[in-house]
Image (cartoon, helix red, strand yellow):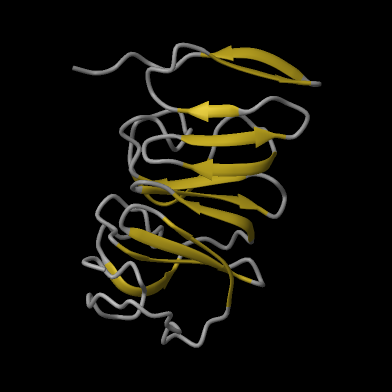
Length: 173
């Protein structure tokens, strides 16, 4: 809990279950490397813990010891905290990601970090999402899975309305 990833407004290590001191009720929670995120039943997203890469999504690049509202009016159905990034599916199936993007894990067509949710490029709706340490996997409707990670050799995406090869840019030296 060195970065407040427990969300209890402290950095003390606690070895028993706790109730967050916010009054918010969460329906799902996901933990990344040093941050955690959760959704309310209304689809509002909150994150807390380490935030130096923007992974809390509140518009700041700093740590928070307690839950902060993700800076978006989008209602989410799923949230996944990754290494130093976070991704979520909107209730309409569109994917949004924020935080560290050194390896292209946000899937936004650049390597820029973002401290607020950014719509994943491609115009595709998704049924599931999973965030890893430096990559993100999304399953599009009517298609095979899709990875976002720089230097992937080739990512192939197929759906009824589109078929295309997506190549990631070479690693910068």
